[in-house]
Length: 500
Image (cartoon, rainbow, N blue to C red; front, side, top):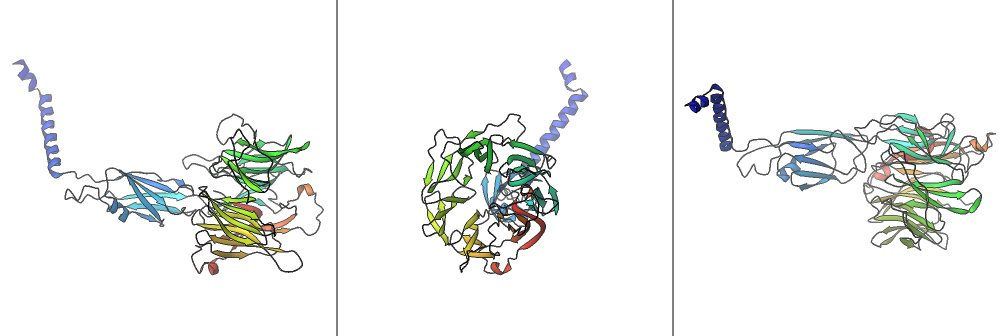
C-alpha cells in the first residue's frame, strides 16, 4: 500500500507523462524516417590565408554524401580548376595550379544530396554552405638603388601598394633569401663605409607578415645577427626550401687554402639555443644549390656536378654527373633539374634531367645561360639567356624565353638591351608574373667612396636600376606573344625577388 502511494506521487506522474510523450515522438520519427539535413561540418581553409604550397582543401560532412551531387554542385568563385577525391565523409579538392595571389575566394555548396536519400525515397538536400579563404598578397623584395633607400632591403606589397624599408641605413645589403612562410628574410650585408668589400655578415629581418593567419605578425624591421665574419669571409649562401638549413661558402681570412661549404640549422622559432655551424665533408666547389627535399646540396666540382648529403659522415657524393657543370634549378618536387653542359667549342647546352635518368637537351647557345626557374603552374621552364651579337666587338644581348618541357617548344618573351648581363629575374609563386630588373651602370666617377657604392656581381658600379613586371600567359596560347607587355614599376632598385 505504501508503494502504491509513492508511485502516484505528482513527480512520478510528470515523469511518466514525459516518457510517454518522448516515446510517441521517437515512434513518429521512426515512421517518418531520417529527415535531418546533411551539412558541412568543417572546411579546412575557412578564413585562412593560403600560398602556392597549399594545394588542397577538405570538406567534412555530417553524413555520407552522394559524391556526384556534391561534385556537380560545388562552386568556387573566382573559379579554381581542381580534382576531387573521397575518403568516407571527407572530400578533398586538389588544385591543378596554385591559386592566384591577392584574391579572395568563395566556396559554395547547395542542392547536394546525402548518399541514402534516393534509396529511402527522400530528397534530403544539404544545408546551403558558404565558406571563404584568401591567398597571400602579391609581395616583392628588392635592394633599393635611389638615394633614400640605397643598399637597403625594401618590401613592396603590390596588392595593397604599400612599401616598407626593412633594413637600417648603416647596412649595405648584398644578397637575400626569403623564408618560405614570408615572415622573415635571410640576408647578407656589410657595414656602410667598410673598405673590406668581402666583410659581409648574415642576418635575419622580420617582414611584418604573419606566417599563420591566426597569429599576430612580428613588427617589421627587427634585425638579428646570424653569422659573423670574425675568422671567415662569408661569400655565397643558400637557404633550404623548408627554411631550416643554411649553406654558406666561406674562406678563412688568414688562410686562402681554407675554403669550402659550411651548413647550420636556422633557428626560426622561439628557442634560445644557439645553432652550430658545421663543415660540409667535401672538396671545395663552385656554385651550389640546396635540393628541394632540403637534405642535400648540388655543387659544381671540377668537370661535373656532385650531389652531397648535408648530414653525411663521408665526403662521397650521393650522385655525380660528370657531363654537367652547373645545376641551374630544381623543380619543386625534385623530379626534374635544369642543368648546363659546357662544350669544348665554347657553346653551352641546357638539359632537362629527371630522377628517372632521362636527359633531354632543350637548347644550345653561344651566349650565356644566366638563370632558369620551373613554373609551378605548368610544365614550363623560364630562362634568362644571352645571345652573342655578330661583329668584331664581343657583345651579348639578354632575352627571356619560355620552354615547354613536354614539346621542347621555345617562345621568346622579351629581348633586352645589349650588355645587360646583370639582369636578374624572379618567377611569381603563382606563375602569373615575371619580375626583372634593368641596371644602369655608372660611367663616370662620382667622387664617392667605393666602400659606399652599390655594385653588381661582376663589380660594375650601379648608377640606378628600374624594376619591371611582365604578366605571363599560357605558352600554348598563340596570341600570348603579342599580348605580353612588361610594365615598369614605380620603384628604383635591383635584385628583385617574389615573397613566397
